[in-house]
Structure formats: C-alpha cells, structure tokens
Amino acid sequence: MKLNKIMMVAVMAFGMSSLAHAAVKDQGHGKVTFTGSIIDAPCSITPDSIDQTIELGQISKVALKDGGKSTPRNFSIDLENCEVGEKDNNKVTVTFTGMESIASNGLLGITGTAKGASVAITDGSGKVIELGKATKAQLLQNGNNTLSFAAYMQGDGASAAVTEGEFQTVADFTLAYQ
Image (cartoon, rainbow, N blue to C red):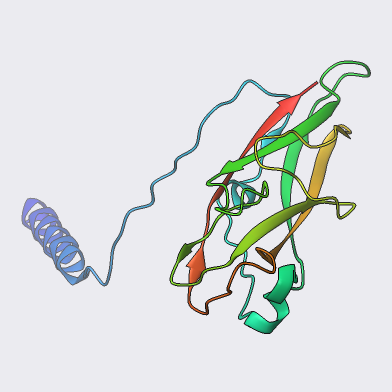
C-alpha cells in the first residue's frame, strides 16, 4: 500500500513536470553577438566613438555659394580607461583620412547626387584639419578623455557650381600616442 502511494506521487510529479514543460512557449528569441578588438594603446576607444554618423542637415545651396560654409556640427572621439605616463604616452594626435575633394582643398570629397562642396573637419579650436595630416597633440589624463571636433560643408569656390542632392562621405581616423 505504501509502495502504491509512492508510485502514485511519482507518476503525478512526472506528469506535472511534463505539463509545465509543455506550457513554456517560444514567444520570441534572438542572438546577441559581441565584437571588438584588443589594441596596444594606453586608452580604449568607446564603442560609440568607433563608428559614428554625423548629420550635417539639409543645407541651402545658397549658404555654400562662393565657398560659403554651413553651420559646424560637433562630434567627439571619447577615450576611456586611459593609463598614461607623466612623460610618455600622455599625448595623442588624430589623423583623418578619406577620399579627398575634387577641389584639391585637403577636405573630404562627397559622393551622391550633390556636387560642388566638400566636408571640412576642425579641431576643438576651430582649425581645419587637412586630410592625412596629424592634429596638434592633445594632452591626456588618466581615466576618461574627450577629443573634440566639428564638421561642416564648404562650397568648392566661385568657379564650382553647387548642385542640390543627397551626399555622403566617410572619414577614417587613426590615433597616435606620444
């Protein structure tokens, strides 16, 4: 009799567990992939700084006439977990590279249907950074650091007709610690 009760309890327990298992529904699933790289540098680059899109806006072609400029839009390269020495690896320069403008003005050329303008990148003081040339060295501190920049559209000059349309350009950046 006691054995029958134990068997009955066991059967009920197994039955309940299979019912509970059958009641679990897949109501959505997915996958999370983590990527990155390990670099030999005194600072890490924040994930938001690695691949950015800066919206320059809808710029009137009148603003770009005769080499005119649009309003600068700020962006930054944020560094974190910096461990710098007092005399070495405590400064950084940034070099931007990309497709140069057909105006050969050291600015970024644009692709798309818009024509007659280029994208200028400036440092934190507003000085234009020429493509392929390093910025002035910026002093770093231990911890987090922000490297400030801005970008704007500039007409390619009086001889260049500004044509409306969509545009884009890509600038790669390289950090060099000193």
